[in-house]
Length: 253
Ligand SMILES: O=C(CO)COP(=O)(O)O
Image (tube, rainbow, N blue to C red):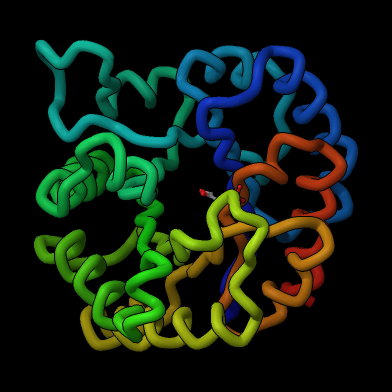
């Protein structure tokens, strides 16, 4: 079965209403050039209403960068699944390395978030990836397998699940994994998912993230097990992001 290409913008703590307007317009204008590509934008939560107001096209969805694992209550500063859904969100990133490193996303919390999201029917984009030191010590596969195991240990069926491989050393550094390095880990992840979930696991969309730009996207997306990208810096520049969406379209041909 052919997997639909998918490109996700992670704006992190960047952007404003003007960028929402210019990005929405650029995407709308280019939509005809990437009709087979699912595009998701994950702005900071306060910009979700601005995105909701911006005109939409069929394959564009809204995402959030994180959610709280609890349903509601005294969790100052946090957003529940119900709150982000109210803002039009249907896709959530979970376990981004910045949240793992700096904002207390332990393996247990990540698993709890995955479970809460799965129960809601939202699409989970689980982020995994090794640090530079772990790669040097040849721990990449061990680390990625452990992260997958920890996050998915209570998950029995894998609908609405996407895995993003984001090597920490490639995020925001300009150091992209080579297509070969990225493919090797994606193939490993696909095997792992196949072992756990069977054919449905083997057919999940897998994304690469880490310094994807307009000029390296096509080569990365051409790899057998890479179905698209999770884009940080380049998702803040309309021409760059549109070019990356166009590169994903070539994959589906
Ligand atoms: O962390 C990322 C996306 O989630 C990748 O960020 P960059 O594309 O800026 O390296």
